[in-house]
Amino acid sequence: MIKGLYEAHLPVRNLEVSIEFYKKLGLNFAWRDDDTAFFWIEEGKSWLGLWQGDEYKTPYHPSLRHIAFGVSYEDLKKSLKWLESIQVEAVPFGRRTSVEPFIRPNQGNASVYFNDPDGNSLELICYVPVPDDFKKITDKLSFEEWEKLMNNDLR
Image 1 (tube, rainbow, N blue to C red):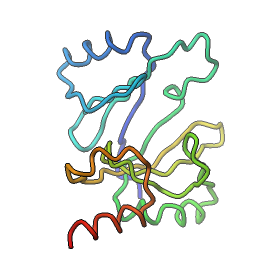
Image 2 (image 1 turned 90 degrees about the vertical axis):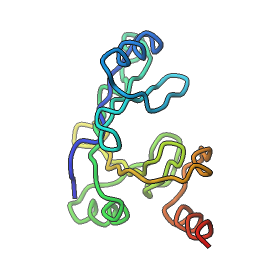
Image 3 (image 1 turned 30 degrees about the vertical axis):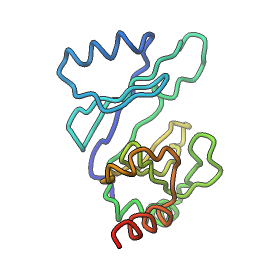
Image 4 (image 1 turned 120 degrees about the horizontal axis):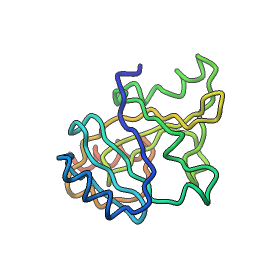
C-alpha cells in the first residue's frame, strides 16, 4: 500500500521569513494559509509543510509528530479495510468526527489518519487531480461526494 514519503513537516517561528528561505533554496511554493505553508520537494509527489508556532509555549506541535505516506487513489479508497486488517484504528482529522478518507479539492489531495503506538500522527495521502473550477472548494469532501461531483461535471 505505501509507495513512499508524501510529506514532512517542520515548525517555524516566522512563516514569512521561512517562506523566503525555502524559496531561495529553489523549492516550488505550493500554497499557504494563516499559519502553514507548503513547498513541493518533488512536484506532485512530495512536499514540505512549514508550521508557524511557538513550540516552547505549546507542549505538542503537530509538525513534530506527523508523517504522511504516499499511496494510490484506489488504495486510499480501501485504506479503512486495510488498516482494520492490520488492527490499526483510523482517527478523525482536526475537527472532523468521521474517520472516513476525505478529499481536499483546494489542495489537490485526499487523506486518512491514524496514530502509531506512541500517539504520533500518521497519514495515508494521495494526489488528486482537480479541475480549476473546483480548486476554490475549501470543504473536505467524502470520496462519494467527490466522485459524484466529478461525474456530474463530466456529463
